[in-house]
Length: 257
Image (tube, rainbow, N blue to C red; front, top):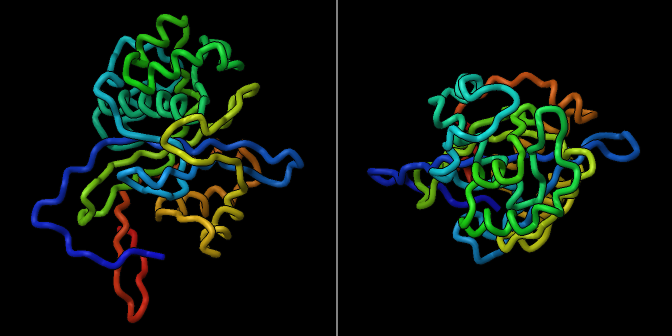
């Protein structure tokens, strides 16, 4: 069910920069792609009970320029997301950190390899989640570098101006690294699973789960691809999208602007 339209306040709450990662893997029988989804606990202040992709807000320490880096440089990400270079660096670092905190997937390694067993970093994951440890410190102490080459830019969604909590969310896609396992070991979610995008949409249409417009739209886009390789090869023109809920007769519809 969609919310009723609201009038934007005279001065909308500033949108906080955040990063979201759409983790994808090939279906074992070769029939398509699955995405990793989490259902948020109902006590959350934002998107309570909704089914979402892993992600969260940018921490000021995510902008640490000392982080070891392999892949497209911050300047390239700034061009893709139409933002400053320091913010682009922070967004990439934030999405790597959030992916690890919320799903246990670590998009890091050395210059020539990617971490395959993240279990050895369980204590660091907990320290990152609590804020006791920064991403820069974790990577440096572990002899790892951030692997920006595993990520692709996908979209930029902004929470409507009438909402009390707002996010300027940059969406990334990444393939599940070989050997790694995505989990739901975070207090922010009640369940986690892999699912075909079209099946997740069917669940939402049947009222079994709740999807916000960015999640629904992204699932619809990913469902058009037959493999992870195709998803990662897709060249995207990123534009800033802010959904609006509009009264259309007796219906509430979503308009993207």
